[in-house]
Length: 477
Image (cartoon, rainbow, N blue to C red; front, side, top):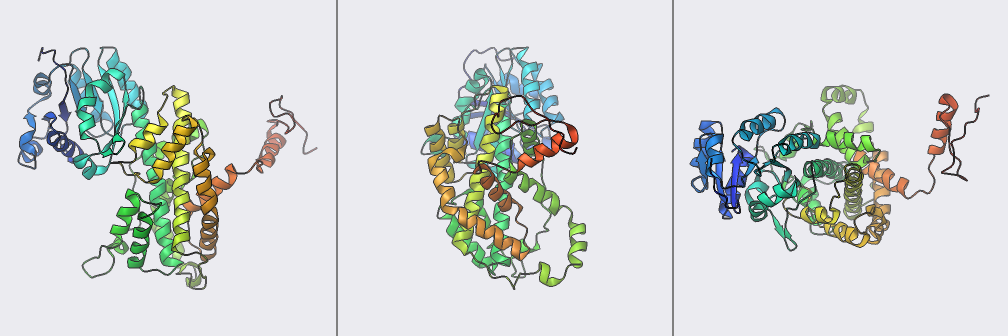
């Protein structure tokens, strides 16, 4: 092993040269970081050596050689498939590491697995960063958003390499320490959940533009591009506009040839499950997940659609849209607001539960560059957290509340028109219900609690004494 006691500033070990790992290696090397990399597949290693910037990365034949080539304290980034592969690589690496060395897991690992691994490593004074990396392959190459969580010692070991690699905005690099344990992977998980909701919102905007407004794909692309020049400026709106301009070989829009069965990898499901655990409502995000599950019932949908009269499921020609493209954009914008608010509410609940002390304004800052949910709206949300000390629900911020007031009529008209037209808009509908419910001083759940007391003697508290002892009434006698 290398007994040097020099710092690991600007030096990064990397395991895994797949699409993401390879692009991160190229990114780091281009930014002046010394990169020593190992890939277990010799053919992939050879291809990488001949690829762009492959010669700028020091390639080694095994993990022992990787460790020996790095100065102490070592900083080794794992870019391998989440799950058992991470455990295996850590087990193989730890035999060669010295006290004080640090490992970062840059895959989409479940945050609880990260906490388990970190605890085991710390027993040997080895440090783990669980780091979410967002931006896809292009982000990894040009500058991703990175969300590392773990010990401060691990963060400081990786920081000199990560900050040059990260995307940058006017406020600095889009990487920051999220907190201890699994905080980084949890933040990335929720990021992905928000992404699910926002992708579905845009899909619904696309469907409404075509089926209710009667717009062509080309006109819808122009509409999305106009949205992207305004308050909806975001990566997802930008790429959606571009997708709608791509034609197939026969000249028809390529998107119309894409099978409408959307797949998923699990982070959206984990987000919804985490919300259920702590009782935080995230209906817009959950609608995005449910919509993908509904899309997977393709054969059932096709059988049922064949039994429906054309007037009940077609282009809704008999219904005149009572909204225009700007109103539709306002509705989608409020859906984005709702998805972000739900995501940050969930982050807040788990930050309290796990004592992570998540930096909400910083999260909103780093999400403005490099990541999939980057959006102009995040600047407003960051300012809201700064004004509120980081502990408010975003709807309580004056600027966000004013945004809701300005566009709520748009959202209400769009959802109503969709219902009349027979167009399913689960994420827009969920966003409207979420906003309406949170703006209601009293909800009909009083009847739900009375029902629970009637059939199960669960008791209820009175409006006049909300903190008092539960009461029970024989409702059915």
